[in-house]
Length: 277
Image 1 (tube, rainbow, N blue to C red):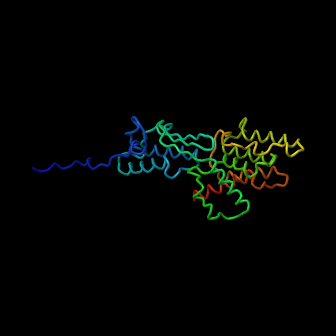
Image 2: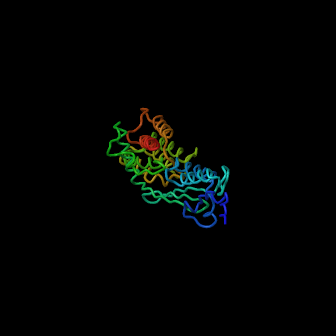
Image 3: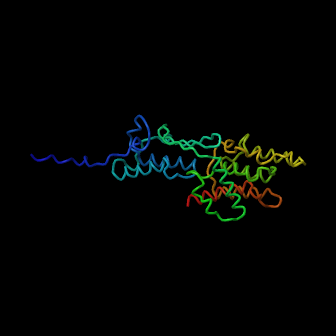
């Protein structure tokens, strides 16, 4: 008897499904990861985190989608989750940030970033940059524990508490904080009850107070700044330029304060650029 020849479809590659890559349940588990799905997650991830982390959800989906398309099991325009089916949420907890990424309303990855460690390391970098000293071998960027999203504008503001927290709030500080808040949130107006509103109020009151010890300090305004921002994102060079310009324009001597708000945002932006290279 002649053996039956295997059919062509027997050699077809099986699609990589969401269940193969993530711990998901229900119908989503058997759905192939499609190119449009991966592109949607990339866009959502980049919007909140400032980039797509290596080894992150978007990267895993992109790799699977490319293989599926190459093997002919999905088309380039195929979609298996809705536009709202991909989300990234950032939650502040005491001393840390929790980033949850979801597909089809199911959490597929949750990462915890130690914010205190990140802020303290940024403080070291601010001090080095202010002295115009090169990064030493004892503080390589790889050891910063920054994670995929980079250092945020809010974290840079919190670092200012440690680098210049005892400085009384002046108009130049308030202007820099406002510029930072606007860039972090994407809003053109000041957030009611936010760090910019508090800084402006403090600068106004400090101008009327003669005793330095009675004035409101930067630490009073910027402590736990990330929780006071409705949204936050990784600092960029353009953010640093905007914050620095705002601080200088509102300073009587047209200078910035060493270790101040603009210095922290600039250091964060520089480190983020180093990480991405």
